[in-house]
Length: 173
Ligand SMILES: Nc1ncnc2c1ncn2[C@@H]1O[C@H](COP(=O)(O)OP(=O)(O)OP(=O)(O)O)[C@@H](O)[C@H]1O
Ligand SMILES: [Mg+2]
Image 1 (cartoon, helix red, strand yellow):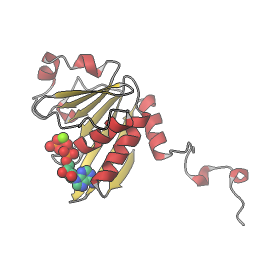
Image 2 (tube, protein in one colour; image 1 turned 45 degrees about the vertical axis):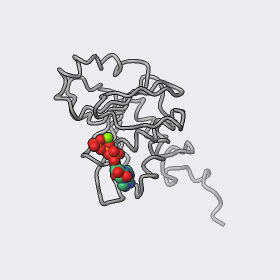
Image 3 (cartoon, protein in one colour; image 1 turned 90 degrees about the vertical axis):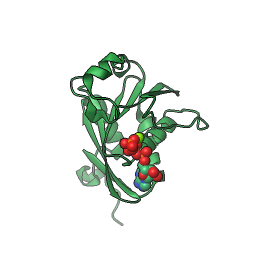
Image 4 (cartoon, helix red, strand yellow; image 1 turned 120 degrees about the horizontal axis):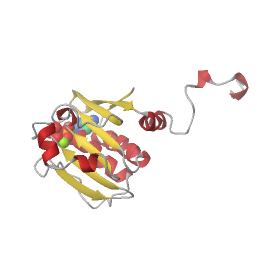
């Protein structure tokens, strides 16, 4: 698991943008965490990273339940806050999107039980103080483990420097 503490909205948006640049067709991103913890701000960044036109506002789909954005890949942004759970989600036909070719980002994914895809990236938000949020990335499945690795090591390093063989280390002088 990777945890990042952001100390402004901008940092949360940037983190979402980095994930968006790594996302691709069929990805499922489950957002969990209390009201006002930053899920929609993160989704706004993710849309930017997927190449959604910056002049298109990314807003909370609390009432519409789903917003569709077109980027490099189609982005489906859900908010399940108002839904009771699986039966309602099934009735609305959301499964088709969850297992489709776009990227799904789902706020209040904790509302799902059996309909939550087993392979997914769960991003959990917690409120620390007015400007700080703790954001944790928990991957299920190899695809998402690889994405989290890339988030943690953007330049493609394989892990902490101390794991490198001695001859790969720069000269100490
Ligand atoms: N570090 C931060 N990251 C994200 N948002 C922050 C941060 N600091 C302050 N905020 C503020 O917290 C609020 C987060 O709102 P946002 O709509 O993203 O929450 P949410 O988790 O989607 O809530 P809801 O469950 O109601 O949909 C915004 O008003 C934002 O300005
Ligand atoms: Mg929201």
